[in-house]
Image (spheres, rainbow, N blue to C red):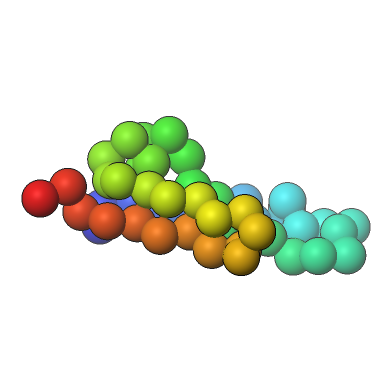
Length: 50
């Protein structure tokens, strides 16, 4: 995968939070793959479009 994210940005986002955010997924990433978001089971599945 060709996506990068600056760790410093996450440090700023997490300041003052009780629960830490480990990462962010944006539209450029989600559009490139078949993505299933399973809210009840707290899972995200990402599949290559083959």
